[in-house]
Length: 209
Image (cartoon, rainbow, N blue to C red; front, side, top):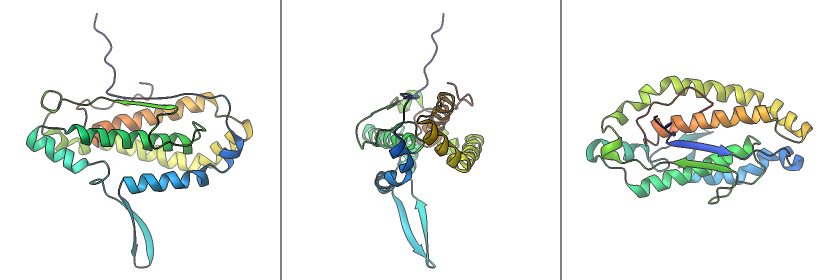
């Protein structure tokens, strides 16, 4: 009998049946400092253009997408220290996401895992990865990008209702918690495939995996 193959990108968050109403009320304001730290680490830049501020994401110094892609294509290598860097960045970003989405009350640590457990497997570039696949993964992942964009927009529009629900109930409803964690797992799988480039396995559309 064949064993079930575990996904290369896994995420789990510990559920709590009680939320801190005080921190929930001020959650977005409390998260600003750690969000700024993440933006700086990810090489988000704030620029002035015709008198308006705008954010520009540059993957080069943050998630190292282009260097990793080129190294896989031309050298069939995935430098371990690059993997370690993006691995820690992904864990940090998901701790921030879990906090701002009110899935945990623990203020995001820059180095401790806390309630958000993430596992990414380091790939053997020569044996596990097709050297030319990184050139087209972004194209193959477009259906996933569209789904993620749709749900991010819906989530943004519904966030005041979710915030008010958690504030009144004093906890995140368990079914809503399961749904949001499933969304984060889905987002992680897509990221692992199309941005981190650690797997050639096409992401499943099943949020329950």
